[in-house]
Length: 272
Image (tube, rainbow, N blue to C red; front, top):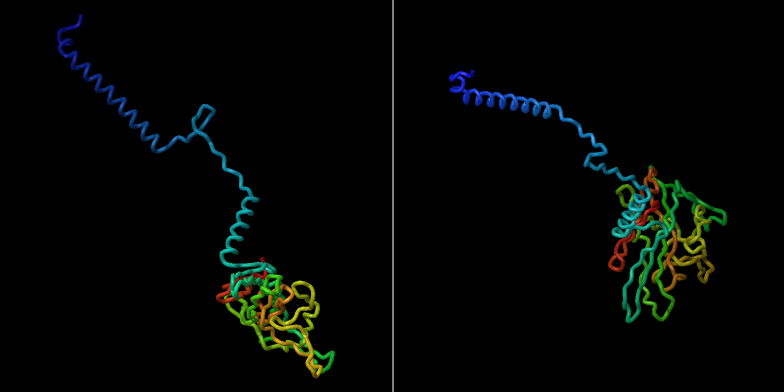
């Protein structure tokens, strides 16, 4: 038989039991939360997981090569950079009445020499003498060509040609100007005897000079060119000579053409 005292304190007992239960449950939750924070359980996606694993795409080497080539071509275009034998052109309309000027220029070859031999007519047919560079230097021959496009002589606007001093060489950040008076332009250079012009029509000659001819005394002469006339057959074509450090490599060199207000500046690399 339940006593009166039990009934008297029944509500108080029930409230105490409920509070004890909440305390136990709360403590357990805190312990589990602490364990979870200290040691996170790694995610293990399985067949029933909602997590989607995205695989890493494979690298397409062909696409990368194409993009690199496109970037290089864009760089070349923006900086007027050309490879050997690539033509740089400029156009001026109505420069002389209705006559249009279209000029094309290129660097199409080069040759390094530790020294070279120049023929001497005054010393005889087989006479050659040596050119030796300054200590620590070597010679660089660069082959340049320039012509005015067109085939109608009546529409020839003609212009003063761009002499050799319009072309300079940059090697490892230094600028080198051509040696314009080192060689007699009438005399052949032994090391270049088998080098052709860009069209493989004539042996190469000094850039900015006409073909050999003879005066009234039957003396061999070679005159400087002045006018650049229309037509590829009237092109300026030949070698330009420089001295560069003997450690210079072809990949270190750029040839800069300065064409002033007509065509601006353009560059050629010896190695693509």
